[in-house]
Length: 265
Ligand SMILES: [Zn+2]
Image 1 (tube, rainbow, N blue to C red):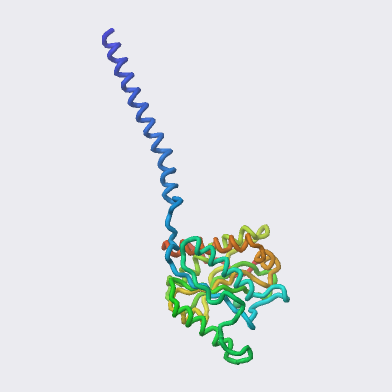
Image 2 (tube, rainbow, N blue to C red):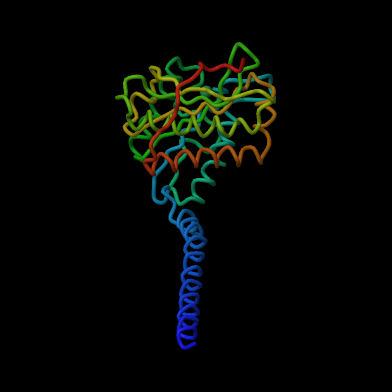
């Protein structure tokens, strides 16, 4: 009988410890994902964009309307609208931003009929960027195509940058984020697989910081024209750019998989 009681006592004690252990294990299992989830996005997290200087070049302006579709859609106007929205979004993430223009004007400083106007406009953008200085340079534009079916964003970078240079990495991160973003606005079956394009772009060649041109959408596509005039789209587009920039500045490895050439076939 004595042994029975002793064994019962030991059994109770043992069960007690097992229960405590189970309790700890449950807490550990449940607690771990919760705490790591919090670590990823604490409310007071410092954004990787905090304190970064981002130069936003607003394409065209003044006598230079850029790409257009009728009188109702001018590239220069959309570039400015998007730049102002992007500036707001970037500032919310703690970035310091500078715009090459915040009104409807060109940067040439010469008479509209002057033959040097276009070249001077571009060289002044480069001079501005190199004088102000910054971590990156984004030149905002709208694209046009022979085919009215081509949609989406295209990233351009200078062809003679080294492979895996910052400019290329920046272009790839932004391209991937914007492809993903555009897919939400796609018609059924459309997949955005645009790849960044490297070329001999004057502005990108002479800017001293990693530089890309963001061709945000196509003025020649009716759907792109429509969505770009929606405020909610403009805001979300800029958030997608910010997501790409966060990856760029966080040194997230680029996993962009080259696929088909641009085209929405
Ligand atoms: Zn343009």
